[in-house]
Length: 407
Image (tube, rainbow, N blue to C red):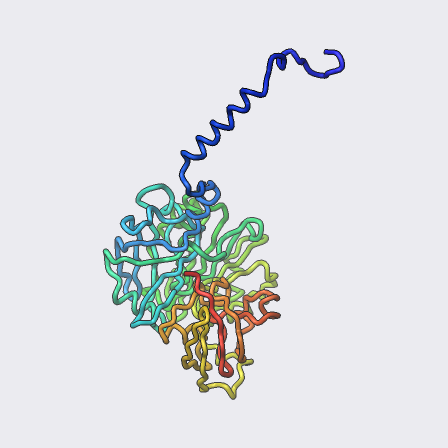
């Protein structure tokens, strides 16, 4: 091979003329090609879109009446472009788009069904179980108007109130109040079918035995879980054999909690959370070991001890700036800025309605607001540069707000 470290034999006889002919070939191919820019779709983008769709167009396939609550089975509306339901983690929620007497509202509701129901390419579904709440607004509208065959728009799955083995103990105690059973029903079904791998003890609080929502259904799921799901019913307004009586106290939790380390998940009304926070301290549980589902309107802000008493009953003006177009509407100190915008017919972005998801993220141009400490989910940068979550911000003066709809 001489001074060269490769054989030159194959190069002998080569001339530049064959390569010059390639120029004509390339020019011909370029001239024949379309003028549009080539498009490509990456598999990662396809997967992301399937898991996190901006909207899911669905139809109501079935309505089941529980008396004071109804379960709605939602299936893809293929005629409007949704081929299948997005997969979800057990106990996530969706935001439902509503129009209530001209008020555009997004309301979060837990997907009560088994995540398995959303798997596959056909016959996928979600089930939402919705109870009449007090005060009744969205729930009253849904329960009185939704029927089989209706078309509904919902978001993709949202929320992080699900089991995470890097964060949560292998043993979980769930504290449910009323319709707060829905995320734990989903967890229980996922455990029974091997989708989730942890043990679940549900302390389910209801007023009376006759008023237990989904009693037969949750007990049927527990029965096929091979002992991994246990359900204990706690009645606050009735003493009855086979049921615990009173409230879900630290003492009651100790009675049924597993030996060793465990996490506590809670879903129910705000009053229940306030009570249970005290019980967690009695148990000596560190904050990382108990969690609360926060999706839903923050009610009763004016009753908080740190709410300025002089502002109660006051009404202010809220100026809303959407891409340079301004509109001024009334807003009351006891009502969130989001609520005021919705009642004025302004379609403001929102999902969780509890200060957690950040979807309503808006800039406070001027004015003062009250933000409850237990619902302040803003980042440090938001606080520094004047960004708020209107769903959990209450006016203490005239306000100017810049919002940024996603549509």
